[in-house]
Amino acid sequence: MIITISREFGSGGQEIARALADHYKLKVYDENMLNEIGIHESYDIDQINQYDEAPRWRIRSRTVRGLTNSNIDNIAMKEFDFLREKARVGASFIVVGHCGESVLDGYDPITIFVSAAMDMKVERTMKQFGLSEKEAQALIKKTDRNRKTYHNYYCDHKWGDSRFYDLCIDSSKLGVPQTVRFLITYIDMIQSNLPD
Image (cartoon, rainbow, N blue to C red; front, side):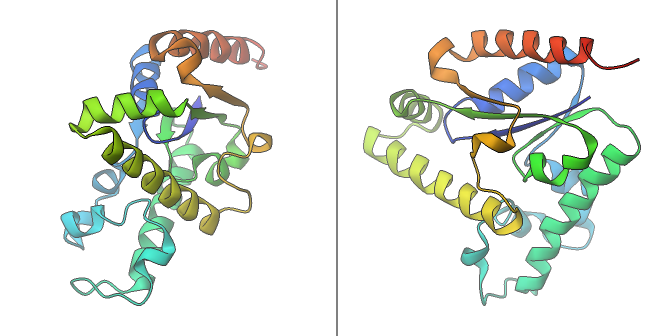
């Protein structure tokens, strides 16, 4: 079973992914993917991490510690290849972000997009990062803009377009714990309908 979770910043998507991973005993690939790939053996991992899911325009015409734009693009490609190889050998896992629903399209993943009302996202972000309301709103807008730009650069469809996800859910309607329960029911129903 492969689950992809795309998410708005502050929607609880990461927390939802972790809860689903605990329930189904699955590995989660998110910002830890660069360590999993072992790319740190070739590059300074701290420098590389700042470009993980970074929008392409942000890195245009830059060189950082010997990394050119093509090197940065290669990082995204390495991540995509890593995910495809895991899927190809039959691994079960959850991927958060990283164009998962598009990259793994040929492997029949369960694709989910998590959104939330702005007030919930602001509240979660303020609490998590110790920010003011204004700072939290700015961080949410910036992060979602970056995610959208990154996704739309590498994918043929638009980030958050409901036509390209099995399920789009607003986590502020039920709250994160109940959203997790709902998703478990949904995933179990899908799994029970699969041919043996």
